Length: 342
Image (cartoon, rainbow, N blue to C red; front, side):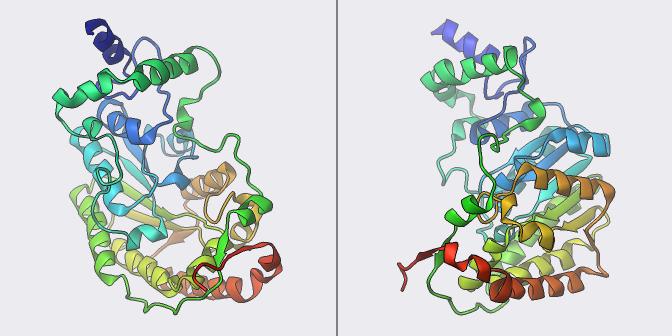
């Protein structure tokens, strides 16, 4: 039992106790198990924060573009409360120069409470109670799967530590895949009032404002990623289009007033969002799109400002309705229909 404990603690594939030792690489593929540990034990001065659409970023793009050292703080759902939880953990022991924050539109309408425990995350890795670490130390999966995986990727192969949590390998990004994974509702729900999510929106903006105000030394570079036109068609049919646009506009209005905030907008990139070969489903895009957005942020392009944000969202509203009434029409015969609610 002692030998097993020493073996797991010294190699520590979830980096719960320390950063990689013995020349091993930081092999990161299980964000629910590893992200929290890396935030506590790794050396870094900046974070790439967001949901699954953020994971295919290569850390080196931002490291080179901003002369910083980044790791990822990611969560599949990307709810604001979950990501702010990760930021709080990072700030416990690190001073951050930059936070590159990918803001999912749906996160602004999500419950403003962390969901880690509710969704079954291994809380023995998240809490500070080392007595329940027996669930980690004496874990067959850790001993016989995760530790050998760490060793193998460190010694053989060409694992790139900058591609932490990257899931794009062996995935297909093309029009056929995107259309096959879009199940369109047969019904069109009534459009919600634009302030339908006002209460949770205010709470989520408040969570972001708390981070921004508490850390004036950090530059927050917040960006809205480029979802496909299928996503816009879907939120029109669910009745969320006007509310989601309003949520983003209100967020920009509030957060752009802070000196340590920059915001970037990529959802209106018509050549990207209407080219379904960039996507594997309604919103998950290829790493090439991640690279494009990183390059634009580095160059300072596509910025939202207090002077242009209202016009930007007005133009996005026009584009969204153009998608629904015009641009999506050639694909309708290929879209699967869900008649469950009909």
